[in-house]
Image (cartoon, rainbow, N blue to C red; front, side, top):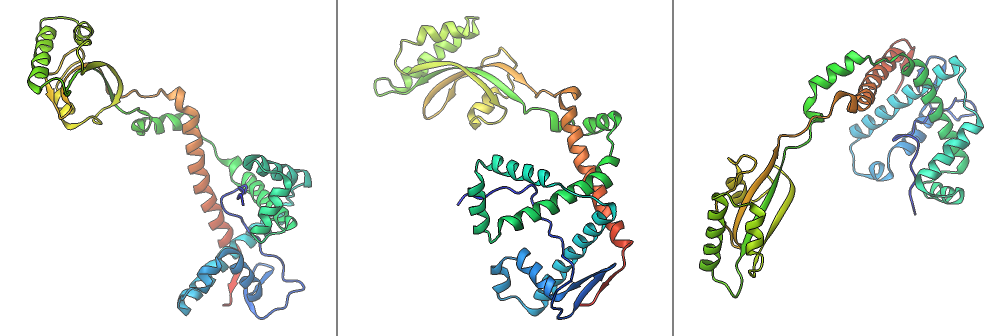
Length: 313
C-alpha cells in the first residue's frame, strides 16, 4: 500500500489531560498538568516500534527508554500549554487544506488516504487531530521564533565569502581525440605508424580535424570532440598525457590495449563560481534554517527552565 507524507518529518503528539483516566500512579507533574504512567505507556506504544519493545533489552535499557519518551511528553505538554495560553487555534478549513496538500503530494484520493491510515493503525479522525496539533505547533513557532529571526544582506555576503567553495562548479576539461584502434585486419605496427604520421602532421601545424578526416577512411580510425569532462576522471594514461598541456596543445601517442590515441586539450576550466546575486536566496534560506533551529532549541530550553516540572518515576 502506498505510504503518505505527513506535513513534518516527525509527528508531535501532545499529551492529553488526565481527566477520566484510570491512574496507576503519577509519572510527572508539569505546571498544572499531570502525566500518569498509563498515559506514558500509551505514548511509548505510539513512539516505539513493537519490535524494539519486544526485543531482549535489559531492565535498565527499558527504564532509559521510558525516561526518553517521558522527556518528549514533557516537552510536548509545555508546548500545548503555551499554545493554550496564547489562545492559538486552527480552523477546520486549515486542516482540510492540509489534508488536501497531503493527498496532492502523494497523488492519492481521500479513500486511499483513509486506507493508508488504517494500515498504520490510525482512524481518519485521529489523523485530523494530529494534523491540528502539528499546525498549532507550526503557528506557535511562527509567532514565538520565526517572526523574530532576521537575515541581513551583510550576513549573507559574509556567509558567501566564507563558503565560496560551496558555490563553485567542479573543474573540467574539453578534449578532442584521434584513435587508431587495433583491428583484425591491421597490426599494431601499422596502426602505430599511422598514429606517428598523424602526430608529425599536427606538430607541423596541420589542423587537428583535418588530420582526423584524412585518416577517417581507414578501418579502426575514429575521433572527434569528447565534450566536457570532469577533471581527473579519465584513465591514468590519459590523465598523465594531458596533465601538462595548455589549451590548444596536443599530446604524444598514448598506447592502450585498445590501440593508439592522440589528444588535444581544447579547454581547461578551473570551475566557475556562482555570483552572490544568483545564490542569495539559497544562502538566505540556509541561514534562516540554521538560525531557526538554534532559536527553537534556546526557546524550548527557556520554556522548560521556567516551568515547574516534577518527575516521579
